[in-house]
Image 1 (cartoon, rainbow, N blue to C red):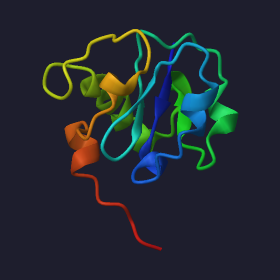
Image 2 (image 1 turned 90 degrees about the horizontal axis):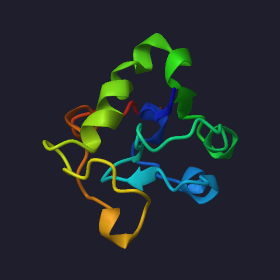
Image 3 (image 1 turned 180 degrees about the vertical axis):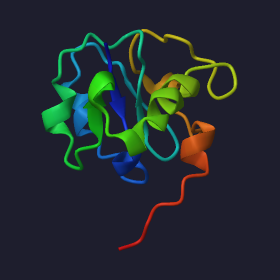
Image 4 (image 1 turned 90 degrees about the vertical axis):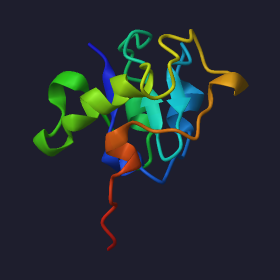
Length: 110
C-alpha cells in the first residue's frame, strides 16, 4: 500500500507533508506534490500534516480522486520526470513538470 496526493493539493503545495515524511518520498512538481509509490513506507505521517486533506491511502480514495493513483505514478515515469525512484528528496528532484492529469486540471473557483 501507499498514500496518494489528490486534487486538493493542486496549486497549494503547502509542503507540510514533505517535512514530516521520514523517508523523503514526497516530491514537488509544478502544481502539486507527489508521493513516490515505491518509496512510501505506509507510515501515515503525511495524512494529518496536510492542511487541505489531499492525502489518502490508495485503497481508501474517494471515487472522484482515483485518477490520481495513475497521476502520482506517472510523475516519476519516463513521460514526465524520468526519475523512477530517486531515493529521497533533494534540490535536484524538484520539477516544474506535472503528470498530464494535473497539468491540465482545471481547479474549481469558489
